[in-house]
Image (cartoon, rainbow, N blue to C red; front, side, top):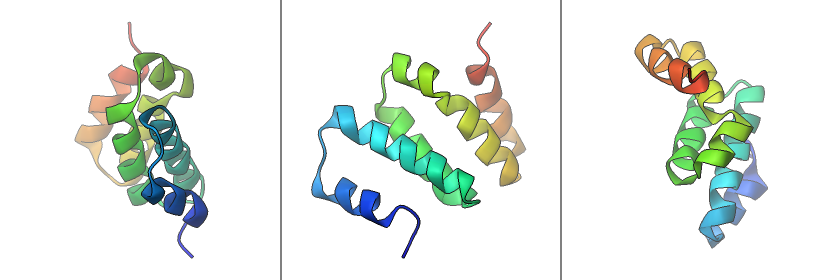
Length: 88
């Protein structure tokens, strides 16, 4: 079964948007922890596109995306997410 099978299944059933972005981000972080950086990046990007700024900052989504991009060898993407993770 794929990483986060039950959560992925729940997402396909239709969660309210305020829960869906959180579930996507959590699934992305879980995939990252398990070494599935491609899937992690996909879920994190989907979640970030829906999430509010407070959640993004609190959960450090940009940092997770920076790390996933680095692990995938996507230097330009990592350099894009890096400054977002560390605003001045």
